[in-house]
Amino acid sequence: MRIHRLAAATALVAALTLTATACGGGTAGSADGGDPGTLTYWASNQGASPEQDKQILEPELRKFEQQTGIKVKLEVVPWSDLLNRILAATASGQGPDVLNIGNTWSTSLQATGALLPFDAATLAKIGGKDRFLPAALDTAGAAGKDPAAVPLYSMAYGLYYNKKMFKDAGIEQPPATWDELVADGRKLTKDGHFGLAVEGGNVSENVHHVFTLAKQHGTDFFDASGKPRFDSPQAVAAVKQYVDLIATHKVAAPGNAEYANNQSVTDFATGKAAMLMWQAAGANLKSHGMNPDDYGVAPVPVPAGASGSALTTSMVAGINLAVFRNSRNPDGALQFVKFMTSTEEQTVLNRTYGSIPPVKEAQADPAFATPELQTLAKVLGSSAQPLPRIADESQFETLVGTAVKNLLAAAAAGKPVTEDTVKAELTKAQQQMPAS
Image (cartoon, rainbow, N blue to C red; front, side, top):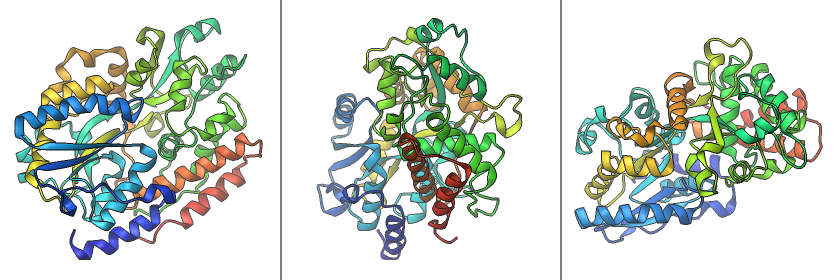
């Protein structure tokens, strides 16, 4: 990494540190004097566990080695650690050659200068820009700049519902509005079971949901100039609506406030909760023994009579694949990106993970014509909006997501959650944002 980039990256690390234990340096790779014939790859935890991801990815990495002679050292990093690991690597210059990033982090990480830009010549080396869905590629960096990554897996949020539990409760169809979701949730919350499972200890999940709700309330967390407005009346209403699932309506279990590692998916798969708002949950549900015939998928509810931005039901979700600029084997890294985004691998990996291929040709596979993925693809194409594509986006996710986590924890402890307490948390988050 060039030395003038180091100060910017270090400042970003300081602003975004989540926990002391998550800030360890990256694994030793070619960037710090390792074998340039071996690539290091940080994959995000897409499956039910990092161990399952290794079982899925290792055979594919062996294919790449057979084709190119380049070995790939794999590490699957849990989502709770991934951002801090990446930020520490951008500051130290000691990181992997290739890595997965949440697509919403692309612009923030791009601003550090640590990622290899995918200009026209670089995109040509991996097959060209036109192979990718435009909406997916648009999440790979700031508007008007070369992408800092390319899309690997595309997703959108949907409302998963347990058909049997709905039938037993006399509910004929999934809720289309929030009033219906609350009413249905109350009917389904009984005998130790709850209407809905949420992942309240997961900062990213929190911010994804309140972003959607803010859109439904007619606002963004930033104004047109990029200035934060976290504590606007509409943003306060959006956050309170989400927290009230535990605080007021009590359709989600208090213990959900601590969930951070896919426990809400487990609760839904095992019948502890009748509904779940998640992005491409099918593969995880299958790994827990849930049959696809046992659940349905519908768009996340909207307000009654919604129109315009109030019809937003998801953020544009997905995983991007990036190359560290300081890789000692950038050609090998780009060969790996080309391999992972090839039509064959896109079909294999997205089929296994139950996600939507961002490579157009791969979508022709019948595996992506399931009712679940058809619903999510429709959401992605019609009612999903990208999170803010600004350099401070990662700070926004961390600060607002943590504010929601704190409010959910207070609700779970039986403390009152009012407009004033919500506004106080959001104001504190806004005050911690770096100056533009």
